[in-house]
Length: 540
Image (cartoon, rainbow, N blue to C red; front, side, top):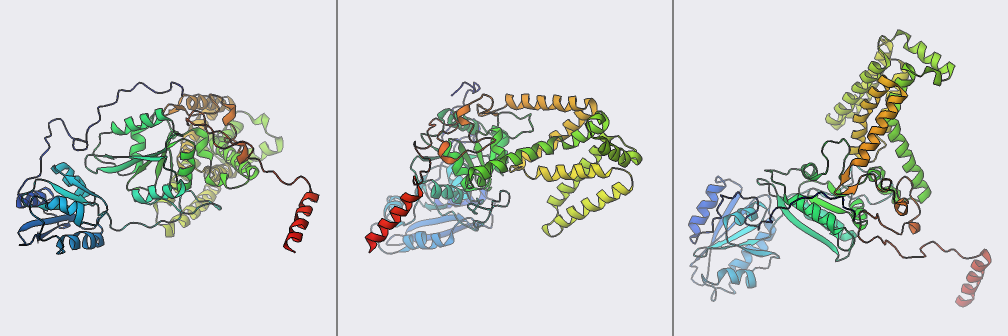
């Protein structure tokens, strides 16, 4: 791995009880008195109505005061009823249970629930309670049991709404972290699929999970991601976008340096290439790092179709991206500086259209682009029932009215419409937004220097792209640095049997498949006929 990583001094890792605590914070231990513990829980939670406290008595003489505490709505009530209450209230161990061995007997012999852990301090107690676990407290014991009863209502697995494909799996991630990681486990059935979990956010205590394939992912990249996640000190993490902005290499850039997706097959494919996935509880979008520029033009369907079809569609996407960048700028440059480069008939027609337009081409293009951006944003924010109708009607009415009022020319409406349609062809929404922003820089360069301004802005953009890093990996790899062996899955997509190596700067194990994977059809038609005849004779 090249030395692209910045020298960073990682903070000393804190224990679970000390996580996200200030230096002056002192860890309080659970009290011996059950009533004191329950009063403290009520006081800390503001006596909230959804915090359920059920007091029961155990033992042969019913002299052991016990309480279970949970938050209604985020627990599985059936698990509490069947695996906790029934286990605690049955008669099998009433004679042998006492105040000293109650917790051990509950956890080791009586409870039939899966995951049970011991809690000794209040920080861990409230962390477990607010995460959906059920607490078991006993009078006279200065510790508690935390039983995993997470549940509640959650969205079922449905089709992806942002990355749709014609051929391929239809399932998409949900807001449940456990469901999302299980979907990857069903695809990649290897024990080398490792996961590391941590909690981020002082108030939200959001569960964040790092997933990678041991032996394929680069250890330096894993270490860097782990260090950046542990350095996050913020009160809340509400979506994976928070994590993305806090751990990315470069902030002052319009280009995304971390890939996000809601498709499990895309995450599985990137894990098998050596990348690392970051799951955040509460969002269906999973982060993938490191990311390179060409990754944002690749669709999941590219790998399910034949290589020639996939290559032609990918080339079309890149061409449409270039159109969305420079189409308005090219029109401004041609009509302002380079009329001699256009056929006479066409330039005369354009000049006739612009004769009554009072604005220069740059102002005309700027006005139409801003109008279309307003319509696009309004169509997204409006309700589904009227959003598409308002966008279409608004574009038609405003465009036609602007032409009739001689504010813009018909050619400019066509150029802006083609540009807007071309921007939708980019598979990644983040990269499409980047093109929408940079388009205005190209228009400014074209209005100032013509084609020279377009080339100047293009060179600046390429230099900026080559300077970016994603967790130490060059953003323009495998173009810069040039790696010929990894060029088979960039602008073009070669057949699967030729893609023998994973990305060299991303993965530590570059061997993807064995040799001689090329399809081997029969040598001649006669051999096929002879095999069929021999098969018929054997059946006879």
